Length: 264
Ligand code: CAA
Image (tube, rainbow, N blue to C red; front, side, top):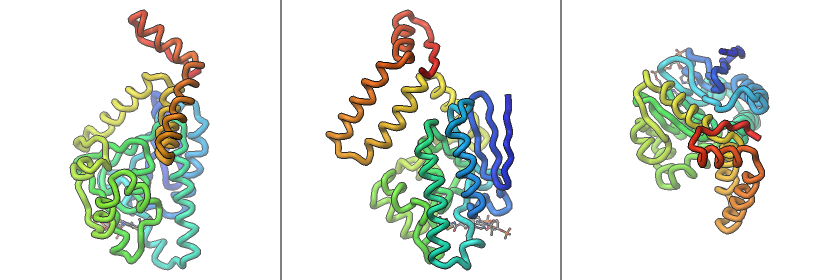
């Protein structure tokens, strides 16, 4: 069953447990203006508690762009106070993506620049079309990345590569992005959604509580000192032994059958 919700600048569908949020401003190459960011925030608030959405895919409308950045036509006349408000709106939306219980997959179908790269980097997994181009072109506009680019890209690829990408403002190909760890999978554009669906279905076969907890412990642990992080992992690991999914998963293995997880 396909459920569809239409926003002004977004499309949202749910099919077979996969929610797909499409940034839908193709005439501006899906550039993120404040209305779109606010709508992303609204959509995520619903998705967060929607039991029909097991995995969330974020993509861009059309074949040319995922998201070509923040909307330059809106930013051109902004003062510092307005710029700070826009950045905060994006940070709130992107932090919400990271805090979703569902695994999120960015399906990068084309230009993934500035705020677009920052959006993709807020997702758990990035799958890109070979035709996609990545970059942080902000310094060419006289600004620094403001939707997390200086921080999340650095955490993904290391300081040197992040500085090279940000200071040159150059675009890199999907294959180059893959080689530096900014993208997990690269496929031809016509296979992009098949690949994303394949990954989503593999995820959905597993114990839902365990998948949710794995995302949480990876993200929380990343900001902790190693001893604290591994003891946090022990706590989370122990908690999974109090779930029905653990009993079912292990019994199914021993009985040589597929597990029927209930997410409890
Ligand atoms: N904001 C607003 N409009 C944009 C846009 C953006 N980021 N990117 C593209 N568009 C618009 C263009 O103005 C154009 O509109 P018109 O048809 O009305 O002229 C339309 O989308 C198509 O774009 P182009 O004609 O430029 O297409 P192209 O194929 O020649 O080039 C491109 C494609 C290389 C992606 C080019 O559009 C481009 O360089 N876009 C801007 C990329 C950019 O600088 N992004 C960073 C923005 S700043 C930012 O994101 C800050 C941050 O940290 C959050």
